[in-house]
Length: 313
View (cartoon, rainbow, N blue to C red):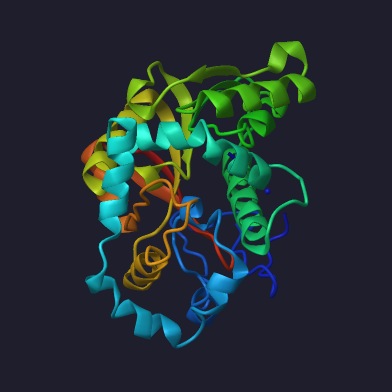
């Protein structure tokens, strides 16, 4: 799905990794809440189609006022209707979305076209920073040449391709056949034949094999916590040395903003978004014998994602 200097830009407010990690569990600064108050949803999927006019009305004190309305609405009803339309639950909705309207929308966001609005462009920057920080985590200690990496939820190949360029042996998958086809096309145009990742259409549950490293960026947002626990355990079972995950962090403030965003459904909000607390993710990892070794946070005006690396205990 897929960003160098470690600075906090006043215009983008992106927290990035410094070149070294003297403290294995060091935490990084979070964007001030005054800036985050313009965010109407924690889900990058939900934000993909929000326009700046809608966001503007939610600035400042409006957040507190709208929070009181959340209990009077039923955003789940719309999600259930969508699930019924495709004959399944969250996974089927996600597959259908990213093979149709979602694919076209995110293909633009993950691309380099100027045909994106301010929110979409900001999300592009945020996700790019998450990919860049992931590459820093993976390459700061050693070369990736010959290292086997599973890119679970590869999207259009924004991580898979840089990994292959560094010499990694990449197995990449996504639930969306359209996304996989796009990623494979990009890889063939940018990489020599011998370095092209192995792409396949697969959901997280169906992944198998053993890899030096397993990476899963911005995918857990589609899983409620009870299912996310199982997915984290499964991903850890595929890895031998490290697991890297990114997820939308669940805090009281971000949760309220997300729920306010659900008051403005719009046609683009096609998938359910789930936030996850860092404590819950850490608990799920420890339960299967893994511990967090590095932590980071990427935030822009409309994108925020916690990034962690875990290693065997």
